[in-house]
Length: 104
Image 1 (cartoon, helix red, strand yellow):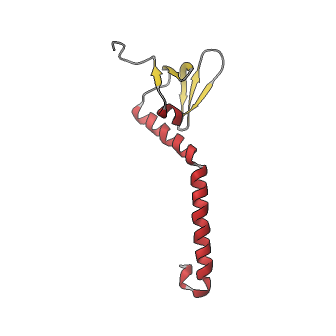
Image 2: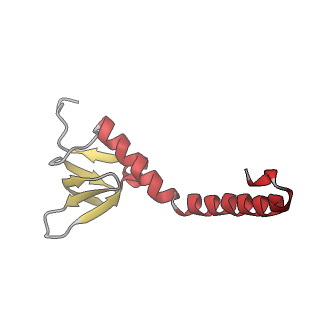
C-alpha cells in the first residue's frame, strides 16, 4: 500500500526487505524449538512411549514421568531427573521395556 505513493516507494521497499531479513533470522533461531514442538506432537499422536513406561534411550534408562510438547522427562531411579528434547527422541532409537506385547 505504501508503494502507491512515489515518495514512499523507497521507504516501503526498505521496510519489506528488513522484514524479510528479520523473518529469516527468527526462523533460523527458532528452528530447534519448532522441531521440538513438532516432535512432541508426533509423540502425542503415535504414542510410542507413555507416562509410566520404562524406556532406554542412548545410554540412559528410566521411567517416563512427563511428556510435554518440547521435552520428555525420565526418572532413572537415583533421585535425578533426565530431560530429553523430543526432537532427539523422534530421531533416535527408543527401547520401550513396557510394551504391551511381550511375545516378540
